[in-house]
Length: 208
Image 1 (cartoon, rainbow, N blue to C red):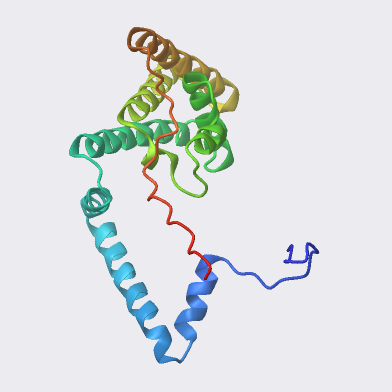
Image 2: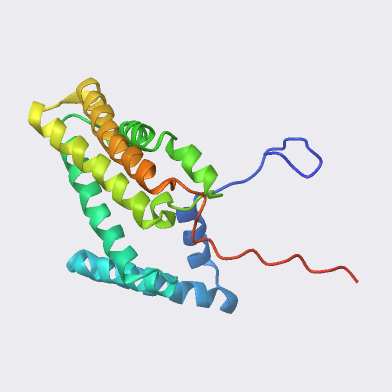
């Protein structure tokens, strides 16, 4: 990995899961707060597995604490339901989770928004954050419309495999694009914007 001097050196690395397991094995009082947090998160996850509605309520509470409006939260959750339905369709029609899901998702997004998912994140100055968590209500609505159209088109022709589902994704995204262009023409306002919900950056401390 690159170091401060610009050269690359062999470096010990670990996944987040491995790092957390290492923390659990540290026999130090300083590690105790993290161990307690891990136990709490693990217990909450067990609760959500037994009652999935808990995960929805937890998400709602998190968004409320972040200052999202009730209307935004409802749209975000509705959009997630639409997303789940299209991925469920893909799962049952020879589309593999991971890379193939990402390819189809990007096709839909590129078609309706005229920018890729990566470009949209860059416009909003996002790095590892979830793009949908930083969309406006309008962006969420058009994303949901594009994915809803994609699923219904795919269902109508029983699209199976990447080739047929790519075609459905392009058509579904294009339909949402037409609606977006009409709204932008009527309102003279762009749907895709740089607005995000990132916390304001703190000013750098002045050197004395």
